[in-house]
Every structure is written in C-alpha cells, then in structure tokens.
Image (cartoon, rainbow, N blue to C red; front, side, top):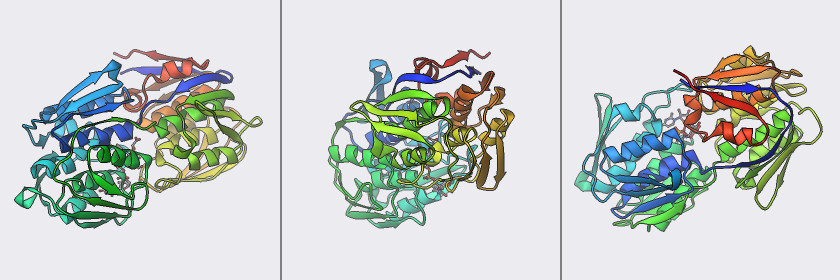
Length: 423
Ligand code: EPZ
C-alpha cells in the first residue's frame, strides 16, 4: 500500500486544475443503461472509483471505452446480457447501487448486491428501494441481493416523497422515472449540482424533466432515450479541498474551472474565517486575508448547505485557527475518524457524538498518520502541509478513489509532497 510523505513548508503559490466531479460521473455512467445508443462523457475524472464503475458496467454487457487518457468515456449498452451486479464489485464501491434504477427501467428486471456499510456509516439503501417500490417495482431481498422486477416489464410514474434528503436515492429514482409509464414527482429531492448535471444529461438523451436543483423534480416518462455527449460538471469537493491549501499554508492559489455557485456556502465560511475567495476568468483565486485564520462554527447540511464531504478538510484548517470552532456532522453518523489522526499531529479536538470542538493551535507537528476514508485522507495531507516536520499518510488507496494526481497538483504550487510506493 502506497503512502504519501508531506513536509510542512511555507506558502503555496500557483494554479491547480480541477477535474470533473467523481460523484457526478458515478451517476452519469449508469445512465448509459437507459438507452441502446451511445452515451459519451467528457471531462471525466481519472479515479479508481471510475475504473470500478467501468468494470461493473462491462460485467453487465455494456461497452465502456476510456479515451484521451481517461478524460473521455465512450459507452454503449445496446446489448445488456447480464442483469446481476455482483457483490465482489458492489462491495468496493457503494455507488454501484445506481445501476439498479436504470436496469429496472430499461429491461424490467435487475439483481443488485446490497452495498453493505462503509467506514463513515451504515449507509442503508432503504430510500432507494422504497422509491422504486412506489414506482411499482416488486423487490425481494435475499442472499444479500435485491431481486427487482417491474410487473409487465415497465415501472409506472408515482409520487416519491423522501423523509429526508438522499443524493443517491434521488439519482436512482430520477433515472428510473425517465422510462416509467406516466408522471413521477420526486419530493424532498436532493439539490446537489451532481443531480442537476445528471438531469441535464438525461434531458439531452430525450428525458422530460423539470425542477432539477429544487426540492421537487417532475418527470414525464418516455418510451425510449437516445444517445448523447455530455461534459461532467466540475468537482466541487476537489475544488473546496484545494481552496483550503492556501488557506492552511498561506500564499495564493487559483483553482482552474472553479465556480462560486458550486461552493457558495463553503466560500462563505472561508470568508468568515478570514480567507479571501475571488472569482477570476479561469476559476477561483484563494488567499488568506491577513495571517492566521479565525475560528468559525460549521454544520454540514444537504446542498446548498455546507457539504459533509468538505467537513474533514475544514477541520484540518480549523485545527490551526485562532480560537475554538464547533463542527456538527449532520449527514453521517461516524465521520470524525480523521480527528484522532489530527490529534496525533498536536490538534486539540473534543468529539462527542456528531459534534467536534476544535481549539486551534499555532502549529501542528508532522507525524505518521493513517487514512481511514476518502475525505479524511486528504484532510491529513492538508494538515501535513501546514505542520512542522514530516507527515506520512498511509493507506492512500482511499485517496486515489477521489483525487487524481494529488501530489502533482500540490507539488506544482510548491508543496514538498511525494508518493512512497508500498509493498
Ligand atoms: C452521496 O452519497 C455521495 N456519494 C457522498 O460522497 C456524499 O457524502 C453524500 O452523497 C452526501 O452528500 C456519491 O455521490 C457517490 P445520501 P449517498 O444518500 O448518496 C442516509 C464522497 O466522499 N441514507 O445523500 O450515499 C445515509 O446513510 C462520498 O465522495 C439512508 O438512511 O448519500 C446518510 O446518513 C462520501 N437510506 C444520509 O442518508 C438511504 O436509502 C445521506 O446519504 C440512503 C441514504
């Protein structure tokens, strides 16, 4: 397993290109199952999760060609000859559940392994299943798999009301609704930019969708969808992560492709903490306004609130802030595993349930630490950039799921960071 060695050093200066969104790509790829015509995605991120989704789609009989060094995914699922998504792929990546809705909508049957939990929580898929049942699906859970059937081979439009916001369940319901017979209204829908991007792609394929980006999405089912070409939206979580690099180290970094509308709540928090975020023609330019950042309180919420996927990274910044910050994690039940690792670096953090109280220290100290999940791993790298001495982050396979070439992007801004090949 590879590790990453980071040496604390001074300010970072330069530009960082932001890739296409992992979490948009992971729902856009299963959309190919909705049509027998080719779907091509451009601006695709080069990540291990994308390779896993590629394997899954290929196991179902779809053709997925990775072109232009992985930036383009040319997909075609004119002949799906297997309707079972196997546990050995699904367990590697929970987003695999997103093939359920499209497969069911297209061919009226699907067998998909339940994803199981992950480090940040149990992460059930009950809302995905309830939504599909509302649309007429008959589901039978056995041997760890969901055996799904649409009576008469076709789902029917329905009112789907979620008790709380779920990104994945909204995506599954939205994709299934495009081919259902009749109208589907999704209430309390997720509003994330990745949902909007999915809806834009589906509309290019001929779907009739209104209200994406709001809490109520209305879909008129159609008989078939055609092919399309669609650019994956910029990754707002990668963007926010790299905005924190000059915030925690000093200096000035321009994030190419960054858009303020994708990170408004996050940028507002940075502003309160004393970090300037300026829109340029090419993206977002970030620098500290004057010296040490100030403590701020953070509560994670569904979009457009502060994203849970930036909580760990923000905690790293607040470990070095002047004052005490309170972070509330409202989305997942166990998403503070980076805290004990940051404490090994001298951070002062008190965790009680879903609340973490962070008392800033003037300097963190480098130490060997362990990545526990995707976003925790990059928060440790940010902390290492600002710490005195050396930090070695182990188990960086977590990192490679969601960040392409992280050491190259940071090195280009002056960071002392290198990958140590593991055995
Ligand atoms: C998506 O996960 C993202 N993953 C996550 O990003 C992100 O943290 C999350 O949305 C919230 O924004 C992808 O898009 C691939 P949810 P998802 O359904 O869809 C509970 C990252 O780091 N829930 O919005 O799984 C769930 O347990 C990853 O890139 C149910 O109880 O998230 C959680 O507590 C991590 N039943 C809450 O809802 C369900 O059926 C929100 O989950 C579904 C979810």
